[in-house]
Length: 75
Image 1 (tube, helix red, strand yellow):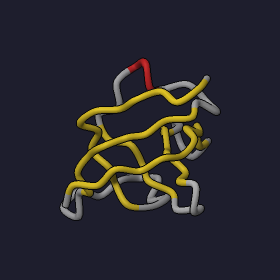
Image 2 (tube, helix red, strand yellow; image 1 turned 30 degrees about the horizontal axis):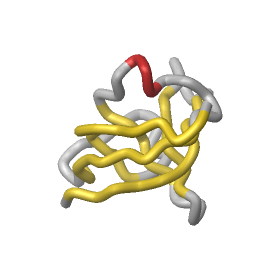
Image 3 (cartoon, helix red, strand yellow; image 1 turned 90 degrees about the vertical axis):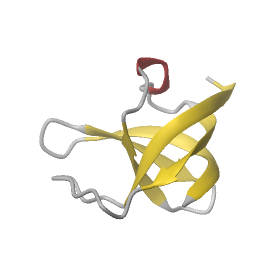
């Protein structure tokens, strides 16, 4: 399922660490295949991608969102 989410990037300190998108509504998405330009804490972004129900992760902090594109709102 393709979705677009607006929110903030956070680095979660679980294991080796993982990058997450926390939506304006408070939902957390674990980012899969996030480009390096997106891996910046507190970055405000709009991300479009696919929710991957077929992927398991060690962090298990929320739905896995495979990034297709993104737009920086502010940094």
